[in-house]
Image (cartoon, rainbow, N blue to C red; front, top):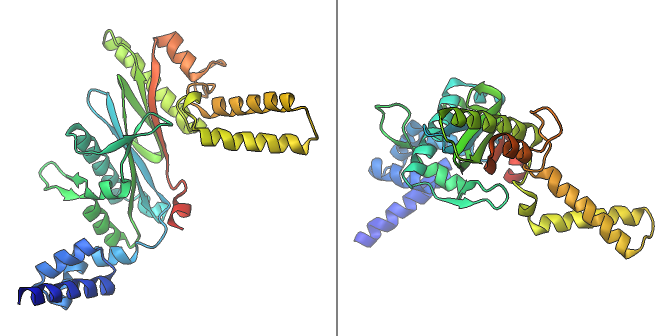
Length: 324
């Protein structure tokens, strides 16, 4: 008898998923809340905004905002990207509030040890493991006296309200002795179409030194947004990336006519080395400071500081390709 009841419930959940397109977990909750009545379960999903949001899930969301939060000690920062289908929705106050709440929740979860991250070999940042899943599960508090709700539930609710797909895309954590951030095309001081976080490694002997380090870190974050480095240092560029550049350089030389192999090897090595320097933050010429000094040299000479990590989110970058 119990087996028959479970089979009937499973069949109902399956049918509800087919009808609504909602995630399995929400269909299970709906069936339980509706007393195993299909129409009532559909109504429950509609009330929660899940069914409508699920129908929007296949649409590409390549607009949105990147938002960050930094802890009071200025040692840890969390950067998140949340996508919408149009810029109009991304500038909606409710959407901006969601971005801020999720970034704040990510920072809190990291402090509590509940945010699972893996090291990024390219930037030394900590990247959220299984980003969509982990962000969806993140407990978010939208107001000081409000109960915690999952980020996915809040995103689905907003999606149903605005009639567009709202996608929790990615999250990253940056930590060091001093952390600062910068948002470009900003709709608020901590969110925009591009946003970056930079962490410095340095000894702050006093409050004045801390402030100077924080200012320097923010200016590096401004450079990151403008120059868009892919790697922290040249030695962190993956071998497969270097090998691809070697192949390109050899192809260019082949088109120019035959040359001795030792000359080819020397030219290819120079081209690949230049590529690694141009794409690495430490060896890029600063676009913010005067003079022709690299970012690393400016920090070392002026503040005895080193770059510990950075992260850059450009809204919608590769989103359409990923969706396809």
